[in-house]
Every structure is written in structure tokens, then in C-alpha cells.
Length: 82
Image 1 (spheres, rainbow, N blue to C red):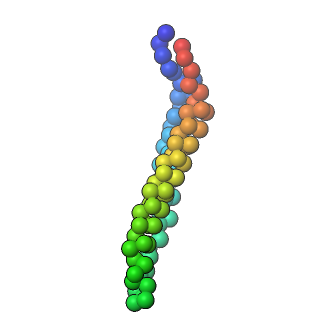
Image 2: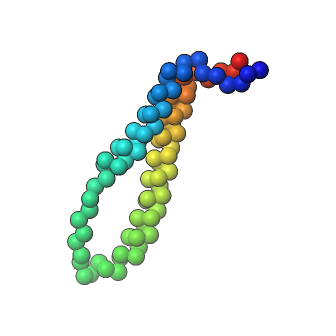
């Protein structure tokens, strides 16, 4: 028993595609323009908490996309036991 081997190791170059969601995420970031309103200043604290939650959700979504791409590449490279 020699362990795990790949039947199509050339397809493992597809693991570079895992970087695509990260690149899309970084290139798609928008710069926000801040406009201050005196009547809405009390909402800043709530907005900061919501922003932290969304940041965590986006991070998990990004990791899930990267894992899905890695799983597809591994599937096409056909792992097998010898």
C-alpha cells in the first residue's frame, strides 16, 4: 500500500483557480464616500457592529468559494489509492 496518488496530476495546476475568488473580492471592493449627517450620528455605533458581522459573513463566503473550487479541481484530478 503506497497511499494516495493522482491519476491526472497535471490538472492540479487548476488549484491556482482557488485564487480567483480572492482576486475578484479584492478587485471588486468599492471605495465609499463618507457623508456626515448630524441627525444620524447616533446610528454610527449600530452600523459599526453590523459592518463587523457582514465582514465575517463575507469572509466565510469567500472561504466556502475557495473550498468549492479546490474540491472540484481535486475531483477532476481523480485521487486514488494504490
